[in-house]
Length: 317
Length: 282
Image 1 (cartoon, chains in turn green, cyan):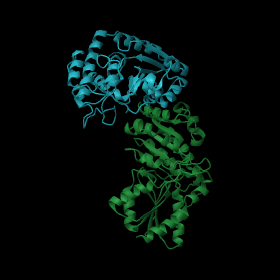
Image 2 (image 1 turned 90 degrees about the vertical axis):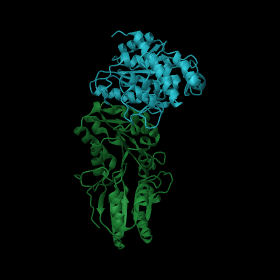
Image 3 (image 1 turned 60 degrees about the vertical axis):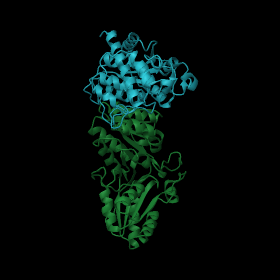
Image 4 (image 1 turned 30 degrees about the vertical axis):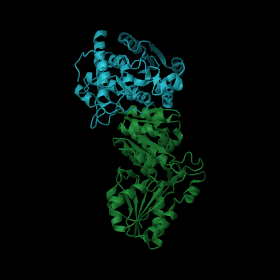
């Protein structure tokens, strides 16, 4: 098992904030919008440096999506910022009609996704957003795993034309992605080569997958680990190549098992290469209040759950 | 620029013919609101707006128009075609399979002149604000026009946008409301009363003007001239455009029943007899 180390833990939302600032410096067409959550989205540095390119919308997310769509007409590259729940479910029709169907170059940037939002509870812990966004034709869906990868993904979106959903979160997680790693939209990252089982993870579950790989190694199981940061378009080639070798797969995500990464992988495998699969995901329920780690354990979204799923799926080969 | 009212009225007559013919040909669509807004569309595209039919999505240096109540697509399509955005012959494809003229306007099929999809109501004012913000950032002094239906004002997003525009001094927006008092289920006052619209928009901080005769070309021109003269003065502008649903076709006038149904052969003949062929039918 390849060894992954890190010097510090950071929140992915801060990776977005750092990426947005850099994006603003690299391209003067980049503008940012926020619906009364500047601090939570870590947009302060961008606003300080580019006050005229920032739009405070107030608590009016539908209006924010429409304004973002309009800003693209005139060449701007708008990045909207609010919580994942208010970035998707609350404004689905605005995104569908004014952004996705209209093919507008809007980057929908969503923090506090999933259970790791913690104490605020299920009203804010959206677990359906990946599904909502990936169902929209033409929408790119990205869920990076740590600070460095979120920063790189934010920058990559500047040069990517078309609507995109960038999902990140609140808690600090190990920042193990090299700062100079290029982010290629739609290109999976092979974290560890293995032969017994493929573990495909996204977002906060990527670090859990690495830890699971170390545990599995102790049990004599050699896991191949893939970081799928881009859920749509899916890197089909990387997935098919891996399961051809291992013959079984575990998918891991901080999302409802309906509509998420696991669904995308299952659909791919069902049509191209039927393969036993286990899902580490929330089992079609809402979340609740609690500490992030408590919630991830209670809802089965940690390394231990991935280990259990891997041991189970291997028996189904 | 002085307006040639007679010429504009002739153009409006042809657009009205196009509308009823398009809706009749596919036996679906929305003639009522389209006919009621014909004079406004013609005044915009053949008099008020600085625009280029060769069409560039970004519209730098051009006035832009957004249709929020997308169901009146027939008047939009006819006006765009007559203004040279695409061949008038294409109007015959309206709402048919493989057409760029979808039931509601869309950018998806690449129809020149359309900059945003609309149909799901309440979204156009927000989009217009965004485009107007882009113009300000680009130091582009041209204007952004947007039209909404009055029933559409029942959508909450409109009022989010209504708050935003005055707060941010969006004085390069000229919005208009097709104030015909009717929606699908009946009179707007009966379905969900809008109350005193002028007072509402003024209370939100808009500079409001009324065009009492929205189906009289001279009145519409006068209203647009007035609206333009008020732009650039710190406030977004709202035109309450009093129109008559179905205007120009006697049996459709003043009834919400023609919101979304098509005329039969006999009704088509009657409607065409009331609107002269001035520019040549498609």
